[in-house]
Amino acid sequence: MTASSRRSSRSLLVTGEIPYFRYHPDPMATGSVVASDAACACRGRERGYVYTGPVYAAEQLGGRLCPWCIADGTAAARYEAQFCGDVVGDDVSREVLMAIAERTLGFTGWQEEQ
Image (cartoon, rainbow, N blue to C red; front, side, top):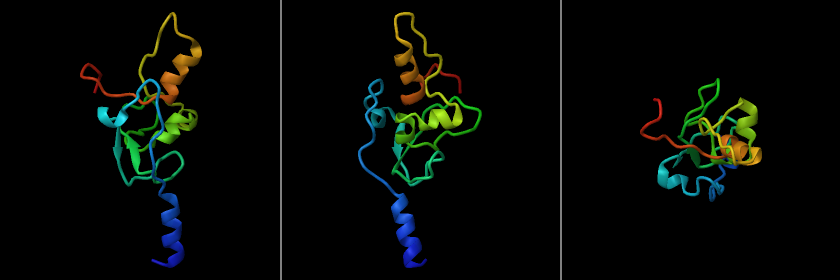
């Protein structure tokens, strides 16, 4: 490996505190986010963590997205994905429903379809 390729591969690894998710405040505790060397499928960056929860999209993306691409909406836009199934509510604004469906980490419950 050349010095240039080592520098290039190191520049892709970005670690740090994961984004805050208002509607899922501790995704590490729920197991929805785990430490990983895997590159995010969305932007190709190794962020140090991947999302392991459900992804509702045409493409199989489980374990291949980082929390940052979910938090900023990039993953939802690129893959027409949602991360929480069947988000509904009569007294909830569309803005909140979209934030939950497209920019909030989901989690697998024991009653979820496998």
